[in-house]
Image (tube, rainbow, N blue to C red; front, side, top):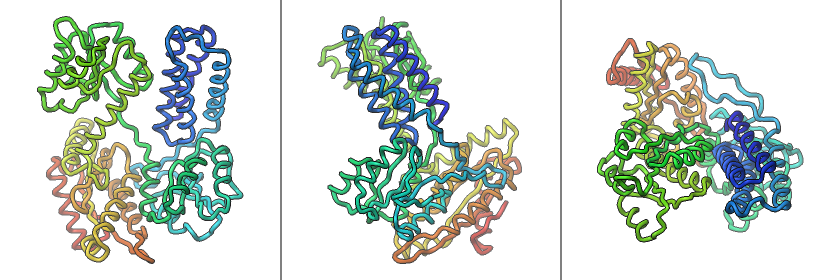
Length: 522
């Protein structure tokens, strides 16, 4: 969650609320509701689950009072209650912001500075119960501080791992912790997988429950997912409507959510706009001079590359039979004008999220979430061309887990899958968002570092090799350790993508023949 974006959204919300208090017109309340919706969305996408919950409650309260122009101004009692809830959220958001913690390494061969503040608090009265979990989290660069149930902080925005099995009256202690730390994430550990226990944990303030039988690697996986703050590109929406006024209303509503828009009044330009703008969703007016929205949708659906692009109709048409027919002929949803801008945002974002999830499933490996084989090569082609134009180096590494067949034979394929995920998590935590990271096949990974020379890349991979070799992979009552071998090559010494991968692969096999657990350069 960006502190700057949060402050901007909060400022917009407060300005709209002040405008409504000064002049209680419906239009001002619309702006306020959009501001609340926008702030709630950015908090939902951040890591402060408690703050997101509070903002969502405010959003629901605002939507309940939305009504129509005739229902405004709202009653003095409702206004005072709303003002109190706004003040409460403002106080929480204006507290000491958490410092930014760099969790990725720059490609200079040295680690980023480590933040002294812990990433997680482990709340347990047992000294030994979760030591293995602490060690596992440490392998991935996460610092864990253990606290007793009698020494809990106030006003924190951290992640709390709560050993509920070590507290006698944990329901009361949990509720108190939630009240004192509304912006934190609370995760229950050590509970038996029973309906009543989990209901009570969630009811008293937990955001997640990890049952007692959940393995430590699975717990680590969930925590790493919660820690992953990678930002997606802005959503893009193409508006096709002959009304300039409609364009302005829609674009204003979507801009509050950071959605990029492009508007057309001439539907004949839609194919060119699709190719140029590459939108995630289209908003089509149902009736336009010389062409209607259904005809536009049918033309779009003739092109295979746009078959899955969501299409939402906007129209004053209320005939249900016509709406159903429009959906059958290429549309995905129907919104009736005049529309509630908050509802428009919700529809647009939910459709785009599903669309992008579908695209991700096509481009990413299902086991690790990394780029798949084809996507890795495609991304490498683009990065290579960019480095060629900017006259920058680019380093390519091929990694392969040592003796992986023996892991599958001895411990089973589920453990083997866990090992592959562990290396994927480690790599994701340590590389930049601009780097290319993919599962190339089986237990082999491709990593491309734009802007890094061969020597810089070697330093990065050498640190990764050491860190992966230090991980204790639990099995039964014990653990085992593994290593990976790596081969590297670099542009501009090698100029084509095929030759870079081949050279790195040759160096990888040289590392294997040289004894494994080592990095070799082409």
